[in-house]
Length: 192
Image 1 (cartoon, rainbow, N blue to C red):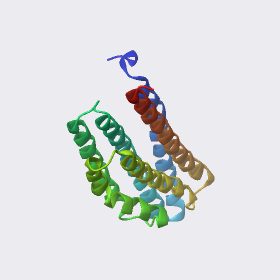
Image 2: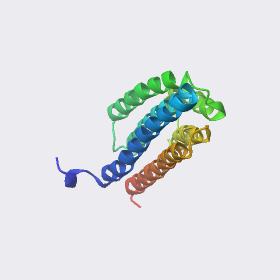
Image 3: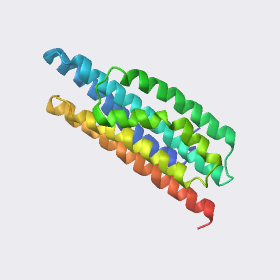
Image 4: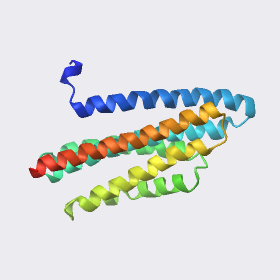
């Protein structure tokens, strides 16, 4: 498989995923250095780890949301949606484990509470036209991104805070890209 074989959405995702992973790695290294100096290793390192896992959950929810849009347009299958949901569930379990050791405030509480309702949201697919379910996914993702961005408010050296802040901005940009991809798919599926 060559780069030319990858769809445009995949290329755009690579452009955003790789810098985000690099920034999160840099933030983790910098947090370790900072924490060694100040004794705050547990809080900052735990928050960065939970933020990394929140990013993975966000990715899973975005893929799941697109699979749902395909399913609703009769262009996808329940199996594809179920596969994405299973991957998301794995990411959610890792996020919950990482978040259990972090004082994440209101943003983390909203994200965890939203994920508690994920099964209910998925079950509503059969009962609605899907628009409300897609909005539910948008809210879950927004809560996770808000948590990721809130990590930058923790005490840290300016370089570490800047790297964490940049990772939060990249998470928001990735969601905007995913929304554009979803909107484009839905427009094409509707024939407009």
